[in-house]
Image (cartoon, rainbow over the protein chains, first blue to last red):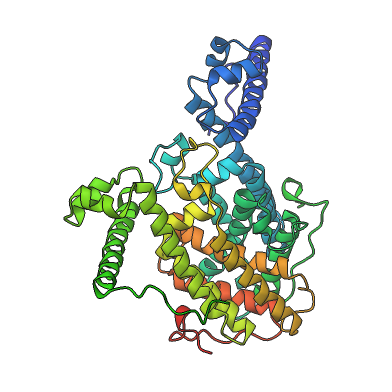
Length: 241
Length: 241
C-alpha cells in the first residue's frame, strides 16, 4: 500500500556505519561464544570470559547482549535462520526427489555443524536430570516446524506425481520416516561419533558414507526410480532454479 | 573344568526363602523407583520418598540399596539385561532378515518402554548443560555393545548369504544405517511423541505405524527379496528355534 510513499528517514552515513559496525561486532561475539559453548559447556561460559577471549571489556559486551541468555538466544536464532534458508533454497529444485536429497543434506550438515544446538532443539532435557533449562527449551521450535512443513510438502508432491512406490501413500508417514532416518544418523554422529565401539567394526566410515548409504536405501526403498545422484558442487545454499 | 565337583554348600531352606524374599523386595523397590524416576525426574526422587511410596521405613530400604545411585545402577543393569536377553533370543531365528526385524522390534520396544534409560545410554548429557551426571553416564555401555555386535553379525550373515542387494557390501555401513533408522524413530517418539507439530500433519499415526514403515522401506531398499512379514505373535523373547 505504502510502496509509493517516499522513504521518510534515510539513514545518515554515520548511522549506516554504526549499523554495520554493530553487525560486525555482534557477529564476532556470537562466533566466539558459540565455539566456547561447544568446547566448555553452557554453564562454564560467562559473558566475562567471552569478553576476555575477544579482548573486550565486560561492559562493552553488555552494550550488545544484556545477558548470557540473550546471547544464546541470538546465536540460536541466527543458526536456525541459516538452516531454514538452506532448506528453502532447496525448494527451488523442481524435481521433488532431488529436493528431498538436498534438504536432507542441508539438515544433516547443519546438525553436525551445530551439535549442541541440535541436541537442545531436538532432545528436550532428560527426565532424570534436574530440569534446569537454557532459554531455547522454553520456546517451541517454529523454524523446525517450517522445515518439517517443507519436507512434508515435498513428499506429498512426489507421491502425487507418482514417484513413490504405490504402498507409500501417506505423506506424513513417509516424511516422518525420512526425518527419523536422518535424525538417527545425525544423533549417532553427534553423541557417539568419536566412540570407536559405536562405529561397529569399521572406524574408517565417515559421516558422509553413512549419509549416502541412508540416502541410497531410502531412495531404493521409497521410489519407483532411483533418485538423482548427489551433485557435490550443488549442495545446500547453492540450489539452482 | 569344575563341573563334576560336588556342590559344597547346599543352601538351607531358610536361606532359600530369604534369597527369594530379597529378590521380591528389591524387584518391587526397583519397579516403584523406575516409575517415580520417569514421572518426577531423577533429582526429585529420594530413597526416602521411594520408601514412603511402598510403605517401608527408610532404614528398611537402605538394607537393600546403599544409595540412590546404587538403586539406579541396579535398575539400569536389570533393564539392559532384559534388552540383551530379547536380542539374544532373536539370534535363534535362522533367517537373518527375520532376525533383523525381530531384533529391531525388541530394541524399539525396549527404547519406548524405558525412555529415560534410553536417553541416558544413547545421548550423553548436553554440552550446554552442567555436566552433572547420573551413574550410568560414567560407565560405558557393554550390553549395548553386545547388542550391536549381534546386529553386525546378522547383517554380515545376510550379506554372505546373498540376501542383500549387491551394492550393500559393507556390514558396518548397513548395520549403522539400520541402527540409525530405528534410533531415529525411537528418539522422535521419546522426545516429541506428544508434540502435535512434530507428528507432521497426522497425529493419528502410531509408533507401530512408524516402525513398520521403516521396516518396509529398509527391507525394500536393502534386500533382494522383501523380508518376511512380522508375525505379531512371535515377538522378542518368544523367538522360535
